[in-house]
Amino acid sequence: MRYKLSLLLVTTFFITMNVLLWRSEFGARGRLGTPLPAETVWEKVLTSPDNSFLEMRHKGVKIGRAHWSATINEAPAASLPTTDDGPPEGMVKTVTGYALNCEGTVSLEDLSRVRFDFTIKFDTNQSWREIFVKISIKPFVWEIRSSAATETLRFTAEDDEGRRDQTYRFSELQNPEKIVKALGGPLMPAFLALSGLPSATGPDTKAAQTNRMSLGLRWEAHNDGLKVGRIPIRVYRIEAKIFDRFRAVFFVSPVGEILRVELPDDVVLMNEAVMSLAN
Image (cartoon, rainbow, N blue to C red; front, side, top):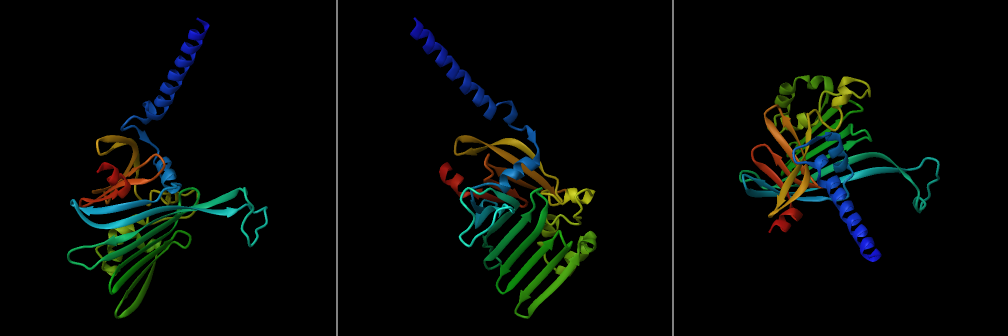
């Protein structure tokens, strides 16, 4: 009898703990559609240990591939000496910032292969510090470099006729139509929106608040589900409107991996690992 009671108590305890763990993971706090702070999701994206290899499609047709990666910038503790052999094992490092990079190629009917490289650096408060965009369509190369510290945006164009540089202060970007006309590119409005301009670097100013991970966009995050084949998995959905008309939607795994991205004009990026599981 004592053995049976002990077994019953252990079984009851085991079932109770599993139910509590299940509720903690998938219960009320993780209900589909429940909102959560966008900063929480971006923190997971910035610190994700997993790279994302994405297939790009336009209206269902494959047009290219992209590689998304996150980097944590660290510095050794200032009180400990550095050596040529590297820091001592077990030494605690200080996080100095983060970086996100997305690079890849796109093939379009009317153009030769387009190569792109997009990098954005953040400080530890998720405030962006530098943005770099490079687009190559032989023989043309366009580059955009934006700095929050100097409050400038530098545009470089290179072709058979040579290289041209133009630098703008954030105060000049109050009139984006004028800048777009000067740059002469159809992709410039999106890049200007992503740069989060105008901006200020003071930590207590209203403009500095928009200088954070939002990049000038208003992001909203929710718990959501994404079907992989017939199996639904728990994800975070974070989205924003571009120019108050277009939507950009990211589906992020609980560890910050990019699983799916939906962009205007029915452009979709899908994680290749997730696609392989669905087949």
